[in-house]
Image (tube, rainbow, N blue to C red; front, top):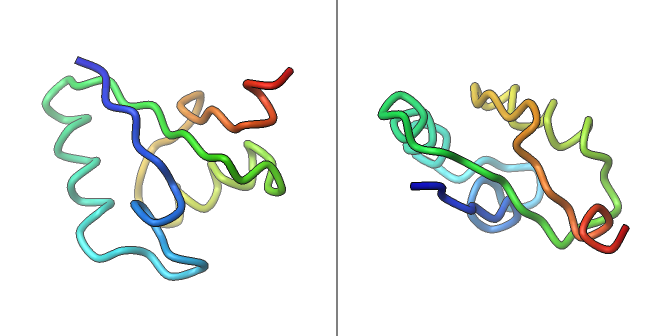
Length: 72
């Protein structure tokens, strides 16, 4: 199964991480589940979003789809 997880309001609220979100994602990844992070915030680049997730301890490399990417 592949999980599509929003970033704003699910992984973080503004600059603050949501408690338990990173641990839950890490458990899904460890269980072999597919993860795709989605966001309608096209202001930040994919690299910036990836770096923010990595600061939370989540490997997001190649797992982010933004509204800008979808529009392109």
